[in-house]
Length: 299
Image 1 (cartoon, rainbow, N blue to C red):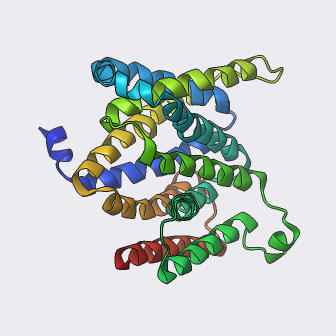
Image 2 (tube, rainbow, N blue to C red):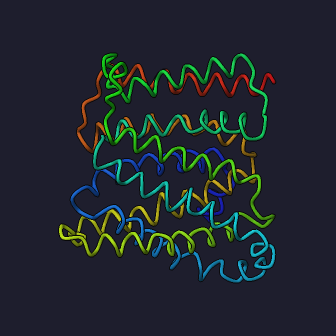
């Protein structure tokens, strides 16, 4: 009964979704030194497939002819949005803070909008352009740690640069959704998970044979299970359900909560310092996204 009520309230689903996405940034920090990035990505998708396939396997088989016809697109989408993004995400966590990752991740909607402009010719209003510029300034502040000299010298933190590349991967996946097979989203996600598992396997095998490889600790396994259940599985199901009820435009507004939740969790759980430049960057990123969304509605 409680689950059916939960699935009937899109705002609650979206808040829980963004909270779980923020918790993924914290999990990335807790995984450092406890489980290696490639192993974490592989085991994450092993667990997701183990849960999703028994439930949605029949639906996948039912829609398989349509999926098979677009398999090339499906494979590329999975590599970009699931294997590539998550691998880079956890590698970035080794080199930067959860706070930085959360704020940088908050710029995704603006990057998607820019991609839509260059790839599909989607119109950009003046207000949206201002929002893009505002968000990019916030991203630059995070990447430079609020030091203008870093921008002049182009001496960015490696983790922040890797996270920005990860964002490009996920935005490529998001933009490709317009070309996905015309099947229900959850069985399609199950197929994405299988492909992510297969493509993550070679990386994990390579990592296993490295001289400095360390097997996962108990904390590493705990983080892996947590990531598989919440950010990987439940958040996707909640998000897809919410989109079915309110549409993607309204659902996207809630992504503004990701950097806010991440900042709070990073301070409370990880004990990270919340500097003045974090506050300024957070305000610029969220403000920029709100301007782009307001510009979209006016258009």
